[in-house]
Image 1 (cartoon, rainbow, N blue to C red):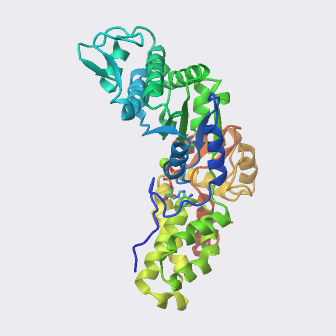
Image 2: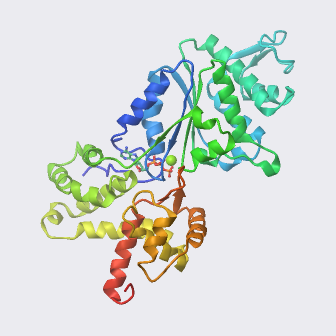
Image 3: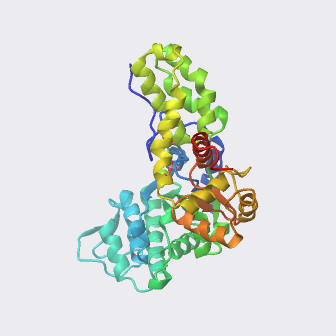
Length: 412
Ligand SMILES: Nc1ncnc2c1ncn2[C@@H]1O[C@H](COP(=O)(O)OP(=O)(O)OP(=O)(O)O)[C@@H](O)[C@H]1O
Ligand SMILES: [Mg+2]
């Protein structure tokens, strides 16, 4: 049999990128802007498919529309200082500007002071850093000037290009550090909004967890108007079916049939969450490949097995890191009607009254903060909460149901 086509795992390109048509259309609209008025924030929980959407789709869409694309993963190190941010930006530029002649020794056409005693000066990382070090003024002014030069050179060397997209993944790692008097995030926003207001077509595409956009707005209130926010959701039932079926084009018919017959069940267990779709299909494929059609006839509980494996691999480690009280609180949340969507402190308090573990509002608030620090929940823009781990509510209910089966009195 052929190799297993499914790819669960961070940033692994899926065999078939399902759905996301609306997001791609919206991005194409942004690519047509002259001048650039809106930048893009692409957010969503872990494993929802932000990185692969950028790499497998948006990047090509940008290229087809004549944009240069530079991409990086942003680590916390970028936020150490404004100089670190400058280095990140200049290193990104260097990926395509390194061959351009910036100046010969006598000529400094773009107004910078003496750079170095070299014959012909290329607009590479070294030159840009020298300009950065030597220019007087604030970091944001220096970066702006260098990017303006980059824009002039770009028009000269690549006149058919529309502009540059700076596509930064894991951008929730950007932050200002007032205690050190360093504001790299603020500088980034200042630089781009200022260049864009001068008509320079450099666009930001910042991708990250749901904490990203509130962070941008916290640094500069005008970020609210500077970005179009696109938040990725689970795949629809139809798109999920495609994500399941399309990778099997070259596989034997019995296997396709088995997947097709089970795509509703897979959807039931994954709810269209892309990482789980890849995980489920990969497990199922391996199992079928080992056992051949025999397994498809007997009443083997494949579904139960994969579900338990997912619990082991994905949920149990996270659950083990919680305190008893945190588990109690999450168990209350798991039984909210809207546990899979947004919920409020009041709803949790009300639900807790129907249970043996009653929580007060301030206690819930305090514990939600601790759960946020453990990566279990997010607070969204409107002060509501969501589970950061998809289908955690279902997992908790499965656990409680099992516990009750062993110990019927425990949960009243
Ligand atoms: N549209 C899609 N169709 C099919 N599979 C997808 C799709 N989007 C993502 N996947 C799969 O889901 C998994 C997670 O994708 P990805 O790493 O892009 O998520 P992410 O949102 O960037 O997560 P993180 O926040 O952890 O970086 C990968 O295995 C990927 O192949
Ligand atoms: Mg990612």
